[in-house]
Structures are given as C-alpha cells and as structure tokens.
Image 1 (cartoon, rainbow over the protein chains, first blue to last red):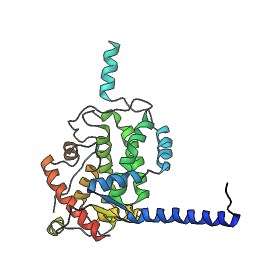
Image 2: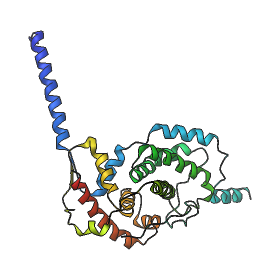
Image 3: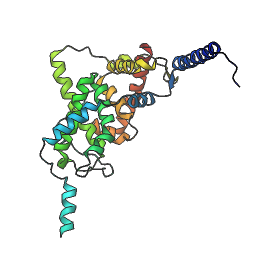
Length: 83
Length: 192
C-alpha cells in the first residue's frame, strides 16, 4: 500500500523527472565516436531527410510530362514476346 | 592541385560496366524516388551547401531521369546513373554561382602536408550541430576530395563505379581517397 502523501508523491515525481533529464543530458554530452569519415557521413546521411515538398513538386511536374519512352531493353523484350 | 573533373551531358555520358540495374517499371516512380531520394538529396546538399538549392536539384534530377529513362542503357546501377545526373547538375549550378562570386580555392597539397591523426576516432559532442560542422569541413576541401568522400560513403557504390563516375582509374580513386580522408579529419578537428 502506498502511504505517501500527495506532497511526497510530487517530490518523488520531481526527482524522477530530474534524474531522467540528467541522464538525457549526459547521453548528449557523451556524444558519438566514428571510426572513419565514411561512417560519419553515413550517419549524417541518415539524419538528413529530403523535405516532403520535393516529392509533391515532383508529382506535379511528372503529371505535366508526356509518358517517357521505354528503355531499350524493355522495347526489345516486348518485341520478342510478341514474336 | 588535382585536375578539375569534367562531366558533360549527364545522360549521354558513357555507361558503366556493372551488373544490370533495378530499372523502374511504369508506375514505380514512387518507389524509385523513395529508394534513392535520400542519397540524391544528401549528395546535392553537401555539394552545394544550400538546402533550398539541394531541393531544386533533387527535383530536377528525378525529372531529368524520368525524361531520359529511354537513354538509360542498364549497364550501370540506377542509383549510379542518378548520381551522375546529380553530379552534373550540381556542377552546372556551382559554375553559374561561381560566375557571380569570387571563391577562395584550397590547395590540396597544403592539406596533405599537415599531419592529421586519422587513426583516432572522430568524436562528436554536439550532435545538434553535426550537420553544420560536416558541411563546413566539406566546404574547406577541394571539390574532388569532397565528391569522392560523399560517393564512397554510399556502401552500394564500388570503387570501380566511383572511378567511372569521377572519370579516373580505381587506383587513382584509392590514392585520392586516402588524402581526402586525411584532409577531412584535419579540417574536422579544426572545426571542433
């Protein structure tokens, strides 16, 4: 049974919140270490998301485009399939 | 100083000799975009250093790829082909920008001459500002070093493909990459 008073419960919660905050800060301060430039750049790439606006713009642009010609190998195989 | 890398017409450039591509069938443009846009955007962003410009370049690259899909001969990977278009487009944008602005050039030999501790890991404390620090570091490098580092960071690209994209031999790529890594570490440590 929990015999804590509301005041004690509030204090417990404040302590827990402070601890969580401190742990988060410590994690940020510890930072990261990368063994190579490539590893660092790969990490940077993963943190870099293309803005969704590009996909929207591209969709509009593609709607205005005529249908592209098929690549040569698709035309070739389509021709063979019909023979 | 390394010779400037020249890229002509992106879609007419000679194709590579790598395995068959994962070509988009009609209607799969969304998956093509989803699979490759992160890489195209990242290369553009770190090459030109401007998010708005990188956004325009990414849009234009995919539009150009759509228009010229029939010229894609399938001798290279599709991403390699997209990279080629991206590199050319970035260079056109940079050339136009350089015509209007004076740019200080970095002498790679000066960078090579300075000892950099490339064995120790690259430590980062402020994750929040990591992107800016990487950008600043890349901007301090010669264009060729920057491009090689960005391409080699994509694990899907072989040395042979990077060599073809940058129009040089694989051995030259290896040698320059070694110097590029050293130069990057040196600049990165300076910016800490």
